[in-house]
Image 1 (cartoon, rainbow, N blue to C red):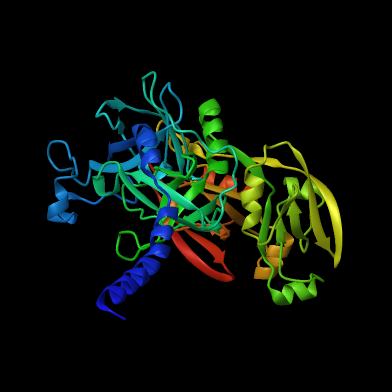
Image 2: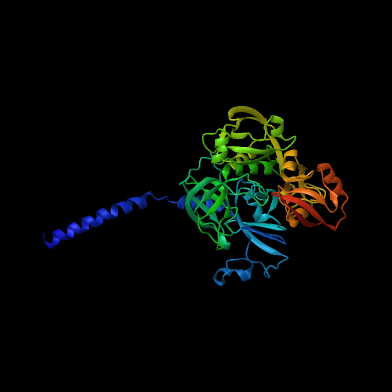
Length: 467
């Protein structure tokens, strides 16, 4: 083989090897049109206030690397601990000025400023917030604004390409892309609530991206970026977005009512493991095992009992216990739905009228204190402990904590849902009625010890009341 033949052969092999690479590159998505069309409706949100958090907690100037400080637009003197500044992202959903972002971006804010990509700025009003889903709805006085469309179908698939636009570390309108890593992730809140089936992605999300949109390849918003898992403070490829089904539901209610009411059953549930599945006659672990039914709750009125395993709810499968709140929370209160259960090793069908769980008083920046509002003076929602609970913990009376209002006296003291309060000061608590009488008699500004049972262990907690 002469030199020319060898050269042609070599070129042939190089071309053949390159072809799969070129073909693969041609199949990669092109995000340019989505970015061009969508960026004008993505906004930067700047908040100020004594308790402002911003996206994932905005760092103070001295905490920011020197080469990045110029990107953080602190107005005037750097904010002190009393007047912090936070930043986040959001997006416009109506031409007359409604904007979606995260609740934690605007929580504790005294003022909210919205900046568009064309550098226009507007003071924003907080229409309402929903801490349970970490969503907030803002409004600015403007017309003819660019908007983003929420996806009408919640049909996102694992492995699908997605795109995020936001302001990480104050770097406006940064674009990152990745794939959907998983769906239906359960991330309980500090109050142990679990109403959001999060989308997990490997899209690079960092502080400042909070509240920004997550797009599919059709340019539709399929989620709102909300949380990251990190050990460094930055992205490690584990980010979580609120799915569009939750966003649509919450935005509609906030726009109409300024607060959110979601479906409620009134049960305490747990997962079904292999041993429980065998003992209850299931072919495999699945469903939500009802561990407790609150007296007078929708579950109680419908005939649900402790020991029932809910396997479908309103036609939707319940693979694990964490899936049940996701389904129930999106159902309009008052609607009757079919529920499939396993009771005494036999399948049954019952009908349940779903109740309503109202948002707490932190739904807007104008909400008052909790002293006379939701949660009472201590910031607790309680119910009389059931006989099964009393017998389990070996006590003769008490109240079970169902909710703890954020920033209340109880939250500050460290009380959590599930605690059983048996003593306040020196006065025993036997029921919800006696609890209310004892709390009513407490002096403002005083400190009192509470005895409670937490996971079977008795303990005392010191609680200081507001003046």
